Figure (cartoon, rainbow, N blue to C red):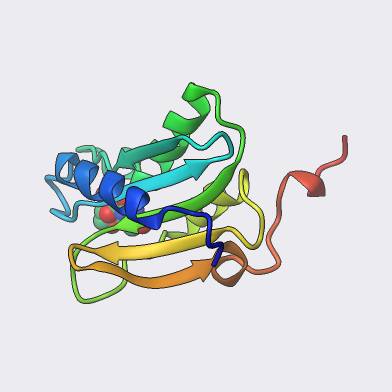
Length: 136
Ligand code: THU
């Protein structure tokens, strides 16, 4: 894992936003924080909907915040949730991250006790399809 990435700051941002999640249906609140190429940290939380498939994940919110702020690339991700199992990004969110991140980009998984696991994007989404696959 890159030594220059401040995972404690990512943890603080994700932990702060997780309680604000709107998750009345699953009651499973998630926070996500990402470090952008310009050094800014952006956070998001899941926002569910009575029409269930319309809900959005915490990672999607964090990515939207990064793009809205002018960030171009993701240098690191931290996902914060609770429960016995690791709250790893869903398949769709792995692809969302893939759009803006390199294979070696770290993705840390945390709960209120701290970081529980660290992966690279390549580990979570091997042999992935991305922008370079499309003709220009
Ligand atoms: N969820 C996230 O926001 N991110 C993840 O990494 C895993 C799942 C949300 C989606 C849904 O609102 C709730 O958690 C239960 O699946």
